[in-house]
Image (cartoon, rainbow over all chains, first blue to last red; front, top):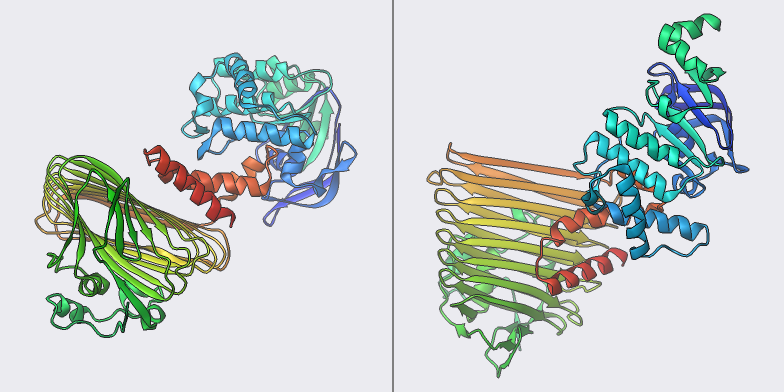
Length: 248
Length: 379
């Protein structure tokens, strides 16, 4: 699905990613774990083309394209979706209008017929119910005055409506209570179809109990230093990152 | 028609002393200094002032080249001579327009009313000078929607103004929709609004387009009177446009809220020069001012000057001003969902403007303002 090779990136003058290599396989759930400042969020930002991040070397190949040559919106239209750690609030932009514009942009890009207002309403109503969101949230301004949990559910709503191929979840579990974590995890699990790939960035194992990852990657000082199965999570939980560092 | 030289005025007029004290405005006059007024007042114009003509009853008040050609069937108007103008106004053009056009189009509203004032100017190189007086009786609620048709008025100047007298417990909601398009006519409005005890003055101005336009207001608030002034400016091309507002809290418990939002494109200049003056006797006042401006190009300029001048201790007051570009974080978030940069910009600009536009409750006015905003943005 995506192959990242020798990725070097910096934010301002701080070099963060230092030759990172990572392959995300089709239909698999990949998890990235690492200490604070290891470069996890920088990696997700580099993949989606965030303006903060300057990629100085390397390639990110996805569907036979180097995504580094694409604008952020082109990357999204190609099926890459990032659920933000801190989704921004945009007063005055209606949530439904925003989401329908995004859906119609994708449909247009794919040469499909645009979803009309009535179909869109039906579609969102179903997902809102599944996510346990308040029904008026779709009519409110985008994330404006939403609680942390509401913002995360709204990210998952966008993901379910836009049906991307590669889903990056940057600390989707931070600040969620038990019910919200369950609702968000169920939303993510609904998206699994054997084709779609997931890259989950997290500090905690709690969400992984729901998501059942295939691969765990440890990111340290701008590089992937270890890759393993779900058992790596248990080692980290019991012994911390020191256990990984000893092996290196 | 006659020709007027603006450096001369009728020195027998009772307002002439006030005009001569202030002098003809120039580029150093504080509230005109970003407006480039000198070339405008140096031009020779034909003069067209308010006159009585045969007037038809209709649905709105239509003033064409200074003449009232239509008025709403359910309101009364007359041409009032020897009008009792405000003699403490800070704007020389307020006096000048009264002197040049001594007959005021006077409307006295004894019951609730809702009507449109349409200004039509289509003569070239002409100074259209006239004044309108609106008086609301106690306990009445009046809404005025003001529009402008300036096509064909090449090289002209509309110098007009409204004198509003809001009686106790009455409300005047004044919505001004000024869409200049590509027209090169200049509009200068110099207004005075006297809000009596427990009266309310709601001012909503929507000013879009190219060219030059400046509105100067003096608002006097009595006990428990309040005013809410909202200004949305979208200036394009080489426009110099904006508002100069002085709100005077003269008595206790007066309240004023001002919100200005400006969007500047191309090489446009925006002006928001606002002062709230709270007098020594105006205890327990509440005054808020806020100005936000978005600059969409490198060569745009915003002159924002919110000021509070306070002579009492017991009040609540705040003011603030921000000038910047569209927030990169917000643009990125929108683009990360597959929406183009141009569409993302439009979304954010509309959101910024809609906060003020959507406060208009009259559906026809709302639609017209939306339409004009979009047309101006895309031109």
